[in-house]
Length: 116
Image (cartoon, rainbow, N blue to C red; front, side):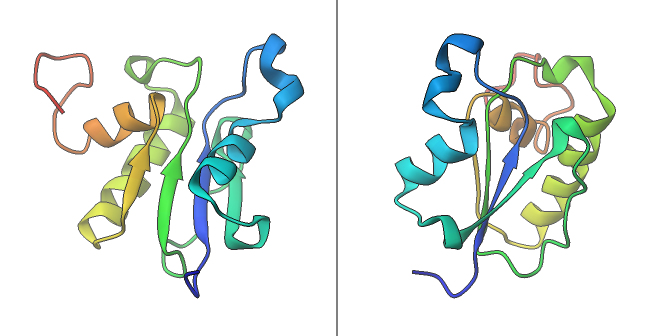
């Protein structure tokens, strides 16, 4: 166990038929083998503010039904935060939408032809 918790950035919620299994942060935490006390969850799509990146062992970014190319305010703020975190050397793992946000760190557009 890391002395520092992992940050889970929630960028959306499961479709209604899957909600009985919990929200994305629960799925991510269980799949990563992390105890609840080893994670901090923020829901950026519903207005939670991104914390100071210091104090986290790494960041896991969930999937979403949103589109990165829509460039929603919460998504743009998240991408900027992730860019700073990546440049500071923080480990990042993006799932679906989260991967697309990370892709924006290395390309100008997640929808372009650049593999990421």
